Image (cartoon, rainbow, N blue to C red; front, side, top):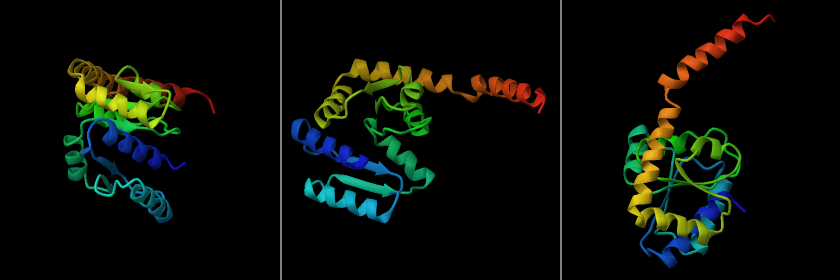
Length: 172
């Protein structure tokens, strides 16, 4: 299954269960034209053509506008390393829901909801909980802010310099 299919299935479940006007914005380029065509075909099969916006590559200003208009940041990837977009979302006070795989749990920490199941109904329910539970949303936004601080250059810079200095002093 294509990862984007899971996002679309989640949107379909969310629209059916909670909000028939919900939209999905996919920001970033497809890995190939064939992949994008396959996802577009799947979107059409689910009758979500009016609800899915695949923005492709965007300018910095456009990216800021997407973050500004976002209710929840969703990451369902199974193979992410350190996930900068998750931290960007946290920086912009957007609650995060992510699939707990690869390095994502280490990046998210307690700053988001980590799911161990990508079933579309489970993911859609998590999205609705973040949209409707103001206290949970605020708690995760605050935890996300602290998570961003954890990775700040002010905190990590001295550690990085210390590590590099130690490596440069080692023989060979």
